[in-house]
Length: 415
Image 1 (cartoon, helix red, strand yellow):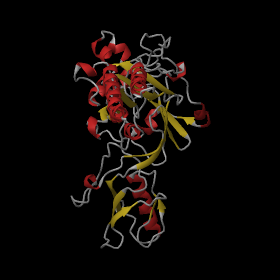
Image 2 (cartoon, one colour):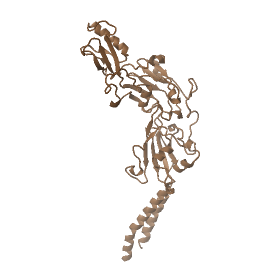
Image 3 (cartoon, helix red, strand yellow):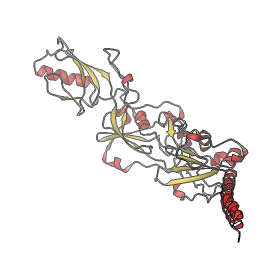
Image 4 (tube, one colour):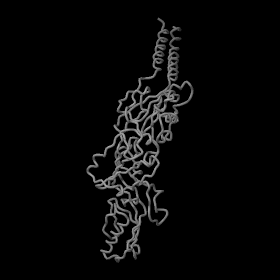
């Protein structure tokens, strides 16, 4: 029996199989507990959580909230009034630079000193004294008393002067509803912004990022479920509660200078606040998103023009805008049936969720806002080929198979 029909049948069977594969795969399956942000629902909206899951934070203290409870660990600390921590002058800490001037001294004791990592300050020839946690006024009095006791200066009121040159960054701990909880450095400066290194002798410093807001941004910013009306600062064995919602809504809020060893706790409201999904003094200015836009399997995204700047997006960007950045939107009609998936993670419980969208329907549908979720830090976007692209690939493979069979056909006829 001639081999020609067999080869053609094989090629046609292969083509039929490939053509049958030019359809969408099954929709992603997710547990309800993985849903976190608005728009993370099935296309028909059947998985929308019920109740107060999406709710803007109240603008008045004492107004109803989704959920609120004082963290249990605060039971072991003493509550104090916020005024106890509201001194705008930050307490001295390790790494701070101070200038010490001793009356009548000719450079033996006077000079610029850095507070040691253990919080001590040691003048030349003197025993170290505790400086961390003190103010410059308290440190001045302590140094004066030490020098007077050692008969090194006369008991004059202005015998010793301590002036702050620079507040260094401090190590603090941030926990709760932030994107990157843990130990952070608040107020850390780069060499170009160091005080007193280029200007010469200076006195005084205001490190505007060595504050609660600066520490929260260093911890990745507050999450959309954070309760910014009740942020707890723990210092030593005492804690105070602060309302920083003014930084979100545009009215006055008093930021608090931090000291080394402070702790911050940001409670979760257990619901999503859209007002917290934009750049503010308490939230991240931008996010990094992983992107993949490949027409064929490849080992890089260069052909899709996805680079470092493309994947860095402003906080508050939605899926459709991210798809435009990934070059998944637009092009010829043959590409208009593309689909995209968003891979995200619920930060409250760590569960992953995968949302699939038809890109063209998302562009043209009037209900896009309900199906166009916010992008969160670390999310991933992947774009899939359209059915027409798959059809073209299948036809190409069938043609290649037929062309491969041709030499055997001619050889059979020659025999």
